Image (tube, rainbow, N blue to C red):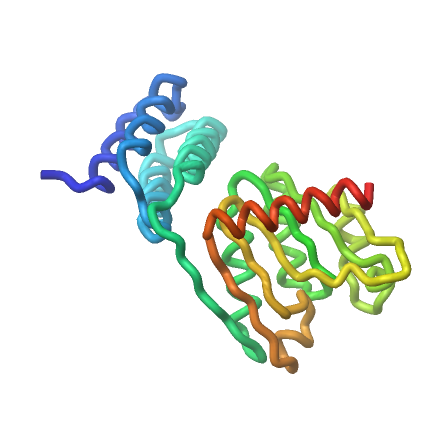
Length: 227
């Protein structure tokens, strides 16, 4: 008897026949997902299988249609609520925090909302630009004073078409959190080179729905305030 992941993979494989996920096929996948409660790890495993299926199909498929199929599959899977919250913690100095931020950015398929004191780590900046280039909506809230620091990438990001809103008041916008689809990153870690190389910092990564809701409310509140 097939388990849930094998059953869902079969549905994905069938929807790839014409390189396009039709409305009926998307509904079939959505209905199948509603019947199971996938953990975060199972969702990641299923998304990995989407990439494997697309890779095997790429030699004989129209690239644009295949990209559209992957996007529709990822979007449908991402909207399925996980059955259990997962949490993990990372620390610096070292590469743990930086690499987790980059990995989380790369996993986003629906949206990226970033609310951080500053951004000056080029590897993180390049990842943000790559996701923006793929058509994933990116919004950034940051502090106006830090935007003028040497090495700041904020104006570069804005010049490349990413909407950024700055706190222009006398106090600092000192948050450090980001929302990528159903993932929240928060902690003391500044998105800078020195945070990775020198400072003792941390980030907490979670998909707990209550926290996601509260941080989303805070982001939207600040986004409106700094309009």
